[in-house]
Length: 203
Image (cartoon, rainbow, N blue to C red; front, side, top):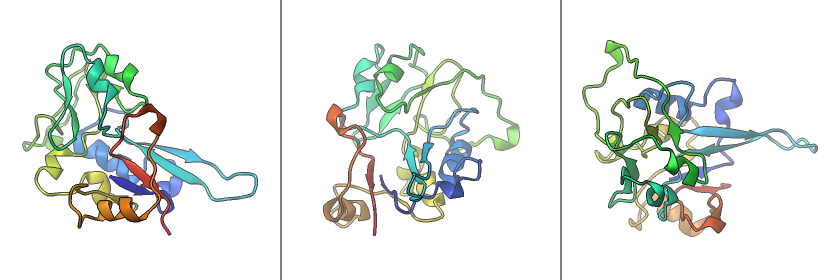
């Protein structure tokens, strides 16, 4: 995934979660006040330059320290690169939370309380199924959607088109074009986690 930080407007910073965060909450029944997509805001500086926003979900690292830290093998990297969690295996020790340098993993303190009308009969075992109390959860790149040829919910809902998603191995994909023609960067590159979540400033 790639985010154009010049376009991202935090959905106007109305005090409500940005639309990407809200779509994620609704699509995955994320217990509140947890947010899998946290959007940080840098306010106006002394020279009056515009506010900037930095969305930070799971960075989907190619070298994920969270996977190495799990003592029971409850989290791993799929063949397509998505880092997932098996909530039935997770023992809630939070070692992965300590290992993640991006604060992208969250402990579920709440029992699932989902109204019957909100239950989704079409869930993915590693994706949007309800989680039990006492496990760690995080962004999965909407595995239940992308495995069926759809965009993640945050990409689909973005009103300004700041988010791009695709296959890095496809030379014709938009994300591949951006990586080859724009000055992209990742967060905390010095840690060698090699995120698959990229940022750039478009023109």
